Image 1: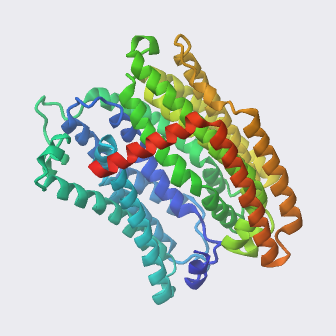
Image 2 (image 1 turned 90 degrees about the vertical axis):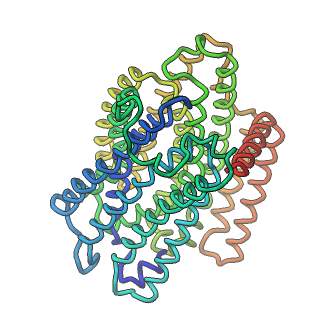
Image 3 (image 1 turned 60 degrees about the vertical axis):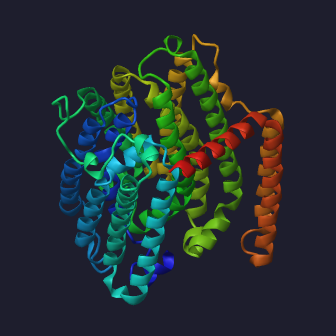
Length: 509
């Protein structure tokens, strides 16, 4: 990717992350609340009303795209046209790509509700691959296009993603597999379009009110999720070069979150929303459902903790090597390694928060969601102030430290809700956050060995020393995973069970 920037005439350190922030903000504000509300209802709902509600994301996306596009072009500092040409066109195309992606919301929600795991994986993977191919092709053949290349590739990505879902459901609903069609709440493609319902109500007002509650929460959650980018963009606390380095390191560090933690959070939010009745005390629900939810939550917490600790321990010793391979001396020298090491700690908190919040938001009543919004409001304000102060004090690392503080508070709020939810039941899912001494010892030993290996073998002594450093890490990782395999038999059984469920879901889809 660095080579793509250079060939296209854009210095990667000077390339602003503002366009991706515009896209992610539009998408998040337009659809996050709708997804959470529409995946929370029972299977006996009127799906026509749900689809009608989901189609409202499109005009909402147009509104946010126009408003934010105006802010990006008129209120924010525009980059130097010589360094970043065609910036205005990029803003338009990134906003348009967000609206295009929202056209697929009814199909995405239906696929999630029906657990079409394979469809989601193939659609997203194919879209990313084709986007990368198109980017490389345009960079090689039309390098003078500059920012046009990445803007068109983003638009192509969202169009491909939506088309994958449309083509899949068109083929499925048009096939002769009547048994499969009977499991779906729709029988033809027109059922997914906006329509008048039998009851006369265009939308389910209970879902609509829940959407509004989640919308207020999603607005605040977006500040907490992308807060450092807003501070960076609106307050200019970092120059373009530092912003570019931070964005590259952030993209690399967030790969695990996007590829592993986000799919887990989305899938198990649907699971908890279906198993538990929203807003109802655990003692008043079916106890077998409560027990299953507690067992799954405990295993998910354990899995998130182990994955996060593994990334943190080994990330500290291999951050400089990873950045040197990924971006050369521009990233591996200076603040890059410190940034990535800090991000490894943030990933640990991110993993735990994703699991605790997916349960919390699935089990909370509408009133509890509204009360939680006040907490989010206070947290958002303190987070923005802390981001500004820490960045002034210790540079771009301050953004990650502020994010760690933010995640720590959110985890504490979710743990408090889970403890209260299961307080009068015999289940204790928070036991998933406890590790056996042998496994803790393996992590500590790995941290010491890989840290010493980095000092003596990385990264100025050539590739033989680097490969030896990698071999040491592989040995320590194998020792740690082996210890986990021997001590966490319950977790291993859970992972094997879930893999079996996903394979079954793939076959049926």
